[in-house]
Amino acid sequence: MAPNDPKQSGGFFASIASSISNFGSAMTKSVNGLMGYEGLEVVNPEGGTEDAEEEARRGRWKQEDRDSYWKMMQKYIGSDVTSMVTLPVLIFEPMSMLQKMAELMEYSYLLDLADECEDPYMRLVYTTSWAISVYYAYQRTWKPFNPILGETYEMVNHGGITFIAEQVSHHPPMSAGHAENEHFIYDISSKVKTKFLGNSIDIYPLGRTRVTLKRDGTVFDLVPPPTKVNNLIFGRTWVDSPGEMIMTNLTTGDKAVLYFQPCGWFGAGRYEIDGYVYNSAEEPKILMTGKWNESMSYQPCDSEGEPLPGTELKEAWKLADAPKNDKFQYTHFAHKINSFDTAPKKLLASDSRLRPDRYALELGDLSKAGFEKSSLEERQRAEKKNREEKGHKFTPKWFDFANEVAATPWGDLEVYQYNGKYTEHRAAIDGSSSSEEIDIKSTEFNPWQYEDLAAN
Image (cartoon, rainbow, N blue to C red; front, side, top):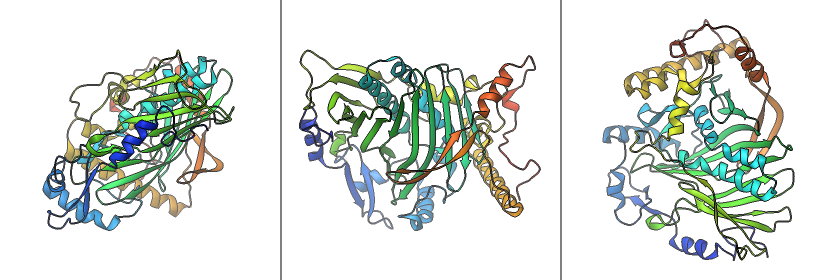
């Protein structure tokens, strides 16, 4: 019997999964010792060493800010708060969600290897390791800025990639992205669904991610696990992503199914991933194991999921060194994403790097960041009102609605497709003989549809 579910299989990972499940979930307690917060859950990933009341007093919030925010947020418990709530800049990082989408490109060399590889199962090892590699960045507990409608992010000078992302919808918030080099094409339509639970939030990735390998046109589809952010207001904020990740080769029917272990008591199982690469007949061919904050390894296996004699675990991906004691827990690549060093010539004025709130926060000026954030949100509301009064409809520049609604495990998704216009735009600029030097940093952020509209 093929081990179709890594957490239930009887092969290589059975004892691991069994011992982790016996630990149960992370240490969760209700706060009963803090007046006004009885019944609120606080989750300590280290588990069992402190009571909930002591853990609840820890974290980044000042007591007065925490109390005020909690009073405001109580009414949203059980709701999808994706775009309902205005949040204080003290919980933000100096990056927009479009830039965060680009972090998946850090280890893009794994997709290059998949394209160069002949073995169909190793192709899944590489593409799945690539998808896992970004979770170290996703564990950051700072919130990225929600993109303004029409905002973009461009990136070059990394692995031969040209990357473009655009905010294509405001309600519901949706982003689309496209990346390409000589080996692969990457396309994503991204939307999230949330459920606010008081001191935590569940995040469901209603997105479609496709990777096409250029050598033979093989297409891969990714379905990631949901994510849970614990201790939003009380205690130290931390992230967990328990559940299955499925990478399917849509061309052959082969797939990889990996299980992200939930964090157990005393941190048991946190970060661990186990699973298999299956052929189209759902027979295991390669086992995979590792930690999303360290590395992933693989080994050929038999039909029962046991390692083949004479083989050994080999490393497919390893986390790059990260800066020590970085204020926002940024990787070197995250700093590169924020830098103008990865900006192309004649950067679009709608680029996330140019957001005044993001830049002020990067410089450590929270007061100015909060003011600029409010100004951008007011301008966006004014634009929406004007657009509705004129009977206009917002149209993205670089992506088109594909007239397709795709089903995901967490709801339907409107699919946007890259229209190729950015490639033409970039080719025209790169082919220009103009030697005019432009100070990119002095460019005013401008994602707006109506140039002469002032925020009221």
